[in-house]
Image (tube, rainbow, N blue to C red; front, side, top):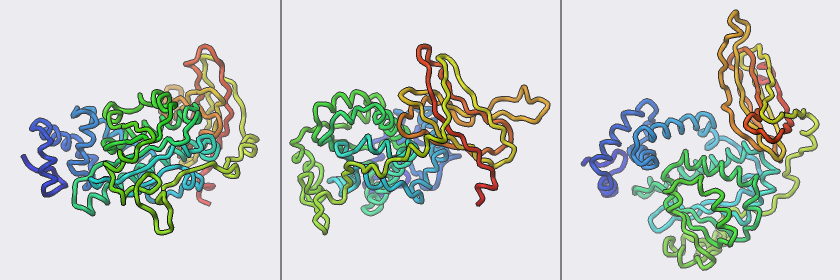
Length: 399
């Protein structure tokens, strides 16, 4: 059997032995099926990640990969990874980071949930920016894996993750935080398969079980099987996987930075000053309120006359959720009444209680753009939405 494309030497031979003849043929067929979207750097190991994530089901793996390509375009992932300047509050207070490598050369990443100010972060950054920052972290992880693989000319495809639950309390099961944390997990599972080798949850308090049960259905069976819950006596467990000089003193190793930082530069978050909080008093004045009866929807129509116009929106849903979507309809033609409705933003249920949900589209064609807030799915409760919509003409965007 031929060695896998993209890796030479003993590692390639070892990896090729992991593939049965049937899997090897599936890999070849998969490459043919997705040839139209592959880049030169997409070697066999890259393709294997998608196949493994879908248990070598060709159709499901192809759909997963094609959905990922759409995801990268929609979120402008390359821009987020290389050019985007995230809000300062995210850079300073999103607890976690990368330091060192495990005994097999995998990068070790840390996530500190106990020192993460869930309330503060949701008052200081938009949901959109939090998700963008999550993508940036995921891309940083992929970069670290590539660098380590190239540095040692050794097959490395995933990371070791340490989740520190020290000082975790009820804030971890606060619904608004769980909502966005669940989105982060779904994003990771759908777009970065086979990235996790093992996860060690340390300092896990009693409430961890409750929190885990609330989010575990967003994780694949494979990911769940890689999670190891350790109590407070974790030092010997970590040192069995990570050499002492690669583990910060704070976690029982011997590594320190030159300036004596026993956490080795890992961000531990902390309480976010209220000076970072988004000024809702300023934004509330520009918002209009609508009340959506149970089992109904409200549509806001905007006639756009110039190509390149930007339609931008912000809205708050209070404690409840609503379905949000944007549609387009061609106007100014004899067949106007029968013009098909084109979906511009797919309908999605959104709850934005504290920080406005924000977004926008560039109107590539003149016509009518319809923003819809739907409560059709609720037969028992009416909803209130506070919204702001801005139409920015092309000449304004050029200034």
